[in-house]
Length: 224
View 1: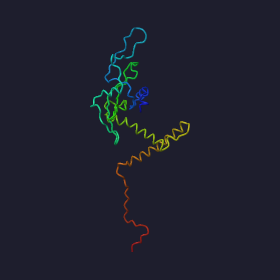
View 2 (view 1 turned 90 degrees about the vertical axis):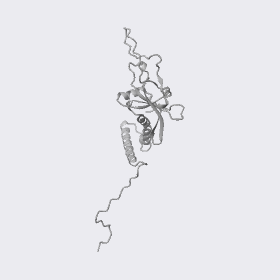
View 3 (view 1 turned 180 degrees about the horizontal axis):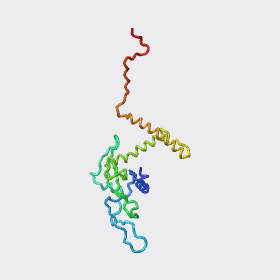
View 4 (view 1 turned 90 degrees about the horizontal axis):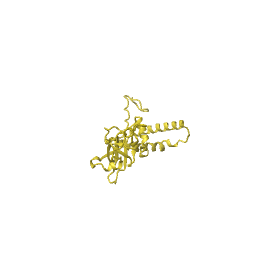
């Protein structure tokens, strides 16, 4: 997901509740806490009303913006990763806790990956990604999945322009469902055919079958 969707905390929470992992773009202003952050317990119960359940923030432990966390990383944390042929970038990944409205919660948000891209020559990082992939996930894997969104965007572009996904003009869900199914099936066929003969692969040339024994071309004179 790009940052337009990744900024929606409710959407990310819903995906997690469905058991789905994600790599979502976020803004550099998004706030986070360290993975080892320990809040203060709720206020003591005064004996009246509902028992306090909100966790409290220790003094001087305000959440930090993703941009500031990236600036604080040591130089050794940044690595160059090639994520597509001819495409590479400088990335760093570390574990954080999203801090969106956590002062109104009774439990901490789970620890996630924060992936940051900072191209050489740029004054500051250009992209930030939040991910619920497992802790053992490698940096190369994180970068590959984060950049996979651009390939998916290209798939949608080809679907709409090449096989007509965007040409539907009906008003019913069933008609659109049928139209989208046929368009996706056609695109899947084209992708499979394209993958069978990639530009960098050796060209496959079919061999003509051998002539069977005793074969005689039509019109040849019979032997004397």
